Amino acid sequence: INISTDFSEAAKSRFAGRAGDVLSSALLNRYYANTTRPRPESWREDVATSAEAPTRDPSDLFSNLAAGAETGWDYSSRWLDNTNNTFYPPDKGTNPLNNPNHNNLSTILTRHLVPVDLNTILLRSEEIIASFLYGNWKDQTQLEQSLFSELNGVVFDATLAAAAPSLADRETCAMMAGYAQRRRNAIQNILYVDGGIGAYSDFNMMSGMYTSETNEGSTSSPPIYASSVLPFSVNTIVMYNLTDERITKFLNDLSTFIDVGGVPASNISVNTTTGNPQQWDYPNGWAPLQYWVVDALEMITTVAQQRTPTSPTIATYAEALRKQVVQAWITNNYCGYQTPQTLPNGDVVHSLVEKYAVNQDRGVSGHGGEYTVQVGFGWTNGVALNFIVKNGEWLTTGVC
Image (cartoon, rainbow, N blue to C red):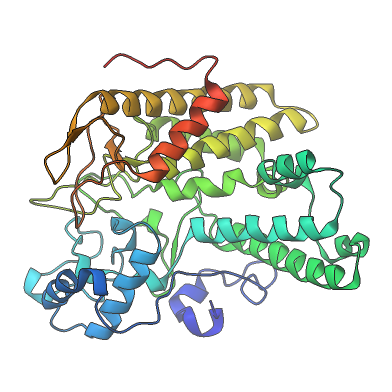
């Protein structure tokens, strides 16, 4: 993101008057697809979507649709124009700010949002690369452990590179450490707001509003997305940027967001007839979201036990929520596996599926989106195996 050109004046004004210029050194990325044509795999659908917005530039719409597909969240109310209604189809009637009916896919604005999850993933990657080049791993076991413990709380800056084993490694280590430091500061200064789960939220570069500040869906509650969880999986954020009060807020928010069958993508309901038809919304739960939440809760537990003074109450709270998510998701997977699935060719199999309805724990498949539910999905199998291997001593199959 080039903040000087990509941020509107309204967006820049959100940060005016703060101590220091939080925008000048910020390092952030967005999802961006450099295309102006319909997606080859969904040509018919994209052309139909464009027809619903006759006043919108089709090339801009197609680019945002492609960017939305690249996010993996294709699609979600998260990407739609829920703030300034810039592209709302005029033939759909008036749609003033916070009108709960702005769920048309033709209003998609993926390229204009700063996403919490993407920037957290990039931060973790930058820290891991810098730490690897730092060369302080004694053996492969320690290296593997470090990848899951966020580098044991090391705060990265350019001075860390001095211990790297070679000149090339020192230069690259310094560069990646600098990137990590800039991105971590940007996540805290720009994407941390009093809203969302634990207060992180996507930021709209056009309207200058956070996603959590809008009123979307059929309830009076602001939108909440599971992507807001990711910063709590980064040791350097949890250890050095978040107080016990902020962590407790996150745990309280999360406890009300978790449903009986796992963690939903959002609190915005999927309604394929009268409302939002997007599949990365409530009540659909997806395996990567469960993994992210469990990863964050594991990190909070570890940090709470390492801090001085320690925070045993927070550690106990986080561990209880972690077990709740693991058990709920495994029960949902197990009950779904017991239910025969009919493949397009007519074969009947027992299989996991790509997404589940988490408002129940009986293995009911999710719904919504541009295609039918997929059977035997890789990430569902992978996360189920991970949860079973790491928690098998206490997990149960649940009651179906």
